[in-house]
Image 1: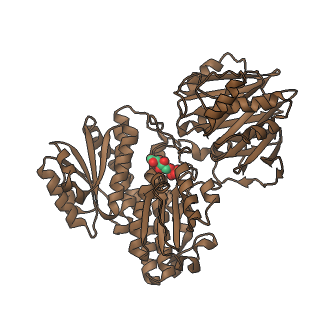
Image 2: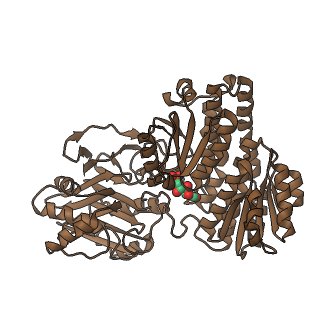
Image 3: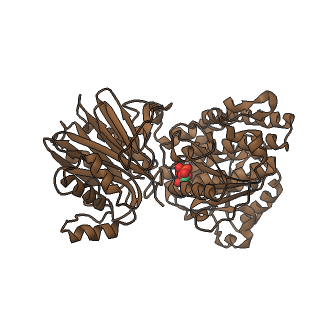
Length: 613
Ligand code: F6R
């Protein structure tokens, strides 16, 4: 979703840093971009619909190259179509101030009317311009930029992260947050802000997360944090353990492919240090995961979106199966508005890669307000969900840049498995020996994942993908713990290949969707040894009888023998089979998209982290 960068320096110019920062944020998805710099007593804005390369073209005259303070933005349209006029930064018309914004100003129509009545002129359809003019009005009254921002924000209802630049005697740079993330960092001669910590890593790994209701004033080597009333707030920076290299492609053609291949290491990072093998148990950081609390859990309510919800659906099979605790799951966006009834003793479990997804965060807050204990599985240290959770399992998957989530999903499933074992041990539904055996199975998964990620498999998947490049649509079928994997396979293909794909519970096909099957239609079926393997084989026969072209993925040899095409996956216990079965599905989507010439890391219309409702 939209990205913000900003910087002020006494020792060097900032434009190149702004562009590099925006490039780091490109993965989040955007449709226009722009920068504003303060130089020579004026603020100059340049913005462009389309990719960053378009903006670089208009900046190539070098006119802004000497500036020592500036802000930049990548926009994912919400109010108003993608266009040069709607792109950020927005200026207040004075030539002295410009602003970028992530989020939504809910009362913008009422504020716009008020500003129009004063004779102020709008040049865009955005809610952001309203905020810009509000700040500008305060600035005209002779306030500092920090005071102007605080006064303007007092009038605003909504969610925002903003950065504002102005030039008076000296350039000023101010940020503020209520909702979408904002992170700041200082260096010896500079100060920097961004909506994503990745954009700060080229400057430093010591960063400070801005909290809701805070305003930050940046000057070279200095950052002052205040609340909206101007009262100072002290907060020590935190060290980020990701480095800038982790966000690179590491020799792979795409981030997505690199991230698929990282998965064996991700399994190790999420799990291995937490396995207490002698006790057949798992140890998580924090008191929220201790026996006493877990013994009180009556129900788990999973809330998540997209791929993370698929991991949450798998969590249901694992937690109910191993710990015998009932689990409900909801799309976070649905949970919020269905008037949920939570029983006492509910643990609300938010699953989120970014920790900033607006619906997930709001659903977690709602669950907390309804009396649930807020817990989360999350990849980003310092993210809002992490900070608002009473207990957190960090997945340690490293930065995920590809918009289509791969390694984050695997890490979430691994974390859910660890949680299921921990809950089961705390509640006595697993003994030490059973715990040890399950954790052994988890450890043994790593070499199996590596064995699957070979050139031979990749080649085989690529050939299958290429054979079906022109298929009208795909079905992905699975049962039990592999039903959510089927949903995930379909989602991956839709996202990056733009082909209609439907994920379905294999046993449900005969209740309607089987009518869609036409001769030759690719039907991907997941089949692993376990309680439903015989049932899946019958479902394969039903599909074949209607002329469907069956592609079986899994370790069930008999099902593989029934297939028109197949990818054999190493065997694992049923609970862990999703972690292996999803890999060929990710590769299938990747190669299908590649064959169709799609922009794999930046699929159309999608944003990496959805910070608006
Ligand atoms: C799919 C994908 C999305 C995210 C969803 C939740 O590939 O990436 O469906 O899973 O937007 O995002 P997080 O996990 O950041 O809350």
